[in-house]
Image 1 (cartoon, rainbow, N blue to C red):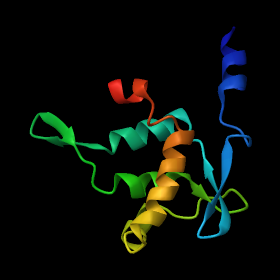
Image 2 (image 1 turned 120 degrees about the vertical axis):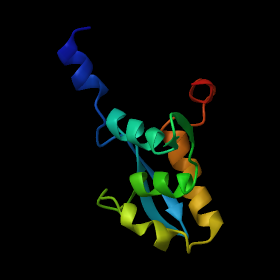
Image 3 (image 1 turned 180 degrees about the vertical axis):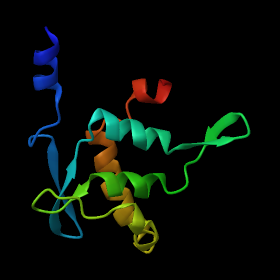
Image 4 (image 1 turned 180 degrees about the horizontal axis):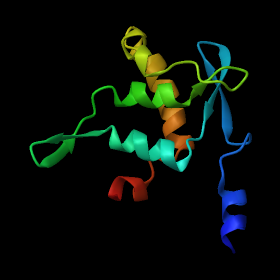
Length: 114
């Protein structure tokens, strides 16, 4: 495989969306590209003095923001909506989060080991 073929075949495409039902309505979650996934993972840590420590505050909501799309596959929220999303029932956030986590391979054993 050469560089061009890897880039062409490995990019996130229109096919990398999954239809889900949220409160009875159709939405989509998207697969993150490598840069988006890296930024999300980085947001789960913060630097305290010279050490990095877990920063899981709003971890589920952040993934919802980065992945939940409307029927036109446009993101529904941005990071300014964290406080608004905190007002939703936990079961709503949890359902979307689990689907997004699965689509983005964030819950497999290899991810947990790293």
